[in-house]
Length: 225
Image (cartoon, rainbow, N blue to C red; front, side, top):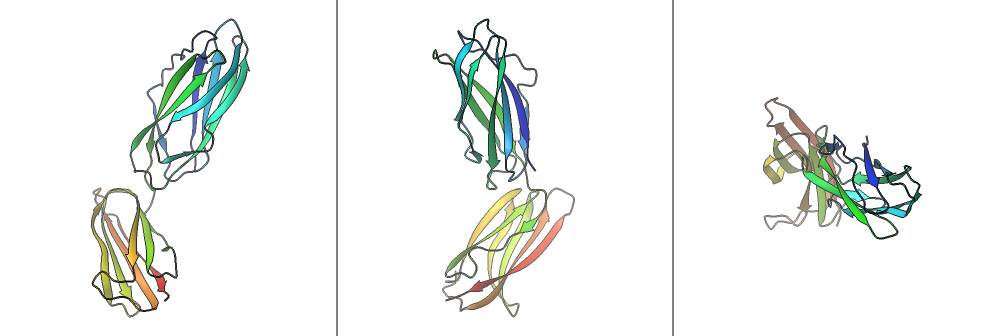
């Protein structure tokens, strides 16, 4: 799933001036962990002369957005003409769900005039509960257990041996919607290291959004010494 953001920018050969766009305050929702999203910028020359060597560059971007281009050349833009500048990007799965950010662009002409524009974005939330396979696996001594929550939830992660005996509680509490990683160590938090063998980790989550959504999932992991 991806998002395409289309925006209009205006440029003159003397000073760079933004066109008045009625949706300039739109906040674009970016799907959770989406890839190959696009921002399509139309650069329009509203002057009566050609704008030379126009470039559009990324001035700043939230840390959870991974831009695949930081600068695009629009070349020369003839009078009343326009050019496209397309930027593609991915959304990091570790983005704060529902978090807001701003992507800032800068237009520069050959003569040195420049103008900046901001596009407001917000990070989407996962669309479902999911527990992922730990990594690395097999492991010694540490591994990462990750999962995602579509809504604020009461979360419990427990570790068991292959006979179903509880080894430890990795997490027990309330977490906001989003993606999470927890580190588990075979060295044991109680001073007792785990021996080689198969173990089980279980995630249980209950949504706090009033809809009584419940989720439970288990996966196996291997300690190899």
